[in-house]
Image 1 (spheres, helix red, strand yellow):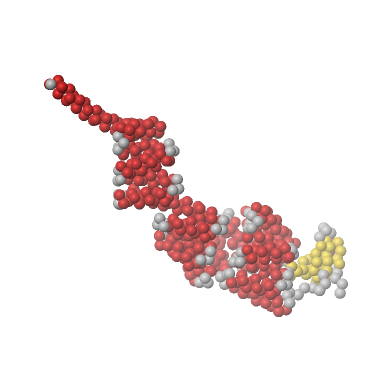
Image 2 (cartoon, rainbow, N blue to C red):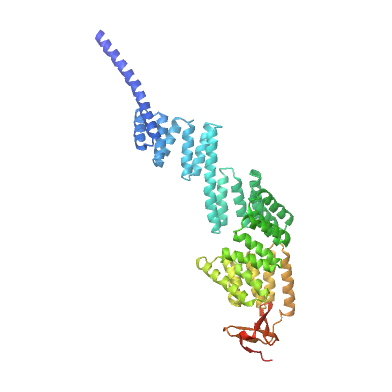
Length: 496
């Protein structure tokens, strides 16, 4: 009997020993897995953690280690499963919540990440790690949404771009950049009310975010509130004094208000900050042109030519200047250059509205008015709020002596503009031409044939022993050309 009791006691002691050792064995394999994980031996780590879990399925730290090993080895599904098991066993494991949310965010599953963090913050309120994790998740969420919405915006899917970005605001508080971007999208749709709301939200978050002030300046200019427009543009300059674009945009705003002396000050500053920027040099040249400082304008435009010879509308601008100076051959050469570059652009982007507009303008410049009219009319039909296209169409109609149509197109351009005075001057000029039947042209045409094979038509105004003065027309524009007799082959005068 005594031996039986001793035997039973031995069995009990053995069972207790096995239980204690077995329990510690689970922790042993878990610790072994940790060491393998630290040395990036993920296969061995997974094997050790699985042994630990077979011994003790409720050891949450082993499930967490296994999740980490799966994640590092690229097993997304395995990692998600083990993180969730860890959370079920230990609902206050900040590490498990944080790692699972991070994994979701890295795989662009932002809704799942934010749901995980919502659950975590209820279980462990006020935890700093979880707060940082939410900020990181929202940052990635907005970054992805901004990329997607920008692609949609560039593809002219503006409504989808706005919707894509707004979806993020439902889960994450907006950043200054996000509200600014949304405001810009609304601005591009001319939804100035929503644009202003979002831009002001960006400023509330970051009062020094000067990009918002720049777009607000454009909004107020379009709404003909030039005082506010200038105030916001100047605010952008004061906050971003090292950003050349701020000076450029304020200069362009002053140019549209025909305050050329002030505009030149800011545009010169923009060029001084970024001397190789073709956009800023072009802006400076355009203010010189509008201020009738043609030599300076030509100089700046030629700098643009050196940097980027196919700069949009550069050659049209030069052509117009040369035409007004009576340098007709140079004007025609520039129009042909513009046509060449526009055709190259349109091969790859046949619906590029800017290239089509510049192309129509240049075609009109060389006298191909019918083709120019067809392109420009198609352009305003497709883009009924494209202001520059109406200017071009007005010019084409004017050259074709269709003054009523020219006035109508210019009037539409005025509706889409911020009230620039030069439009009123152009309208006044067109109305006068309409009343008198258009600019005077000679009833007969004289021809001057040159020895180099070229010929020019116009009206001979004066003849000298060594030269001939020929008056020429290109649409409503008049100029005079001098031809020396040693370059002339023959002259054919119009019959009276």
